[in-house]
Length: 303
Image 1 (tube, helix red, strand yellow):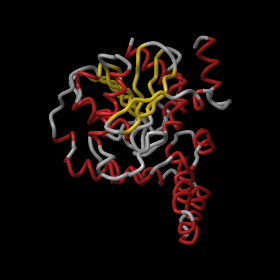
Image 2 (image 1 turned 120 degrees about the horizontal axis):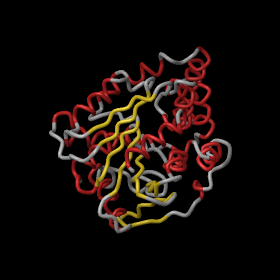
Image 3 (image 1 turned 30 degrees about the vertical axis):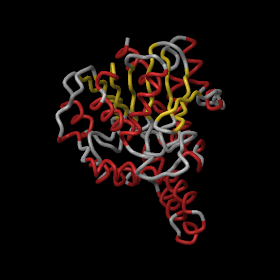
C-alpha cells in the first residue's frame, strides 16, 4: 500500500470527516430536490447505501476510501437526509421515483453512464436499477448485497443474534423495555440496532467504529415500510425475472457476513458476466474491516 493510500485509510477512522460537512449539490426530480455530494475525482461511481432509510452520512467513510482513485457520487436517497419530502407516502416514496432521481443526477452531471455500487439493501436497489436502466450502468458492484429479493430476512436477524455476547443481549433487552420504547420509539430502535451491531462483524472491536458514529437522525424507518410495500405491490423479485443487464458485475461479500453465502452465489449465477470474491475475516461492513482489500478489488475491477 503506498503512503497516500495508507494515510487516507488511517485518517477516515481517526478524524471527523471533512466530507460529512462538504457542500451538497441538488437536482429537481418529480417535484422534489434531490441532494448529493461529489467526493474525489476520476471515473464516477454512484454509491447506494442501505436501509431502506439510511442517511448517506453512514457511507462517507466508504467514499473516502474509494475517492483515492474515483469520483464518488453519494446521494441522499428519496426520503432520507436532505432529500425528504414534506409528505411521505406512496405518492412521494417509491422504487420508480428513486430511479428517476438517479437518472436526474446522472443527466445533471452529463454522464452517459456510470458505475454503480450498492451496499446491503442498496445492493438490491442497484440490481433493480441495472435491470430497468441497463444502459445507464456501465459496471455494477454489489457489496454485501441482500440479493434479488427480500428472502434474506427470514434468517438474517438470527445470524446476527447468534454472534451476540451476553452484554450485547442485555443492552438489546434494556432498550426493548416497553416503557423506554413508548417514551421514544425511534431512539429505542436505534439503540437496539447499536446493541446488535457486533453481530454484523467478524472483528467485534471494529463494530465500535459504526456504533459510536450512529445517530438517531441516521435512520428513517418509515421509508422502509413504504419501499417494501412498493416492492411487494410490483412483485419485484428479480429471481423470477430474467436479467436485462449484461455488463460486468463484481460481487464482494464478507465470508462471515450474516447475509450468508447462498445470496452472493445466487447473484453470481443470475448475472451473465460476474466475478464473485469472498473477503476473508470480514462481516457485513467490509470496507470497515478490510478497507484495503475492498479498495484494491474495486480498483482492479473498474480499471
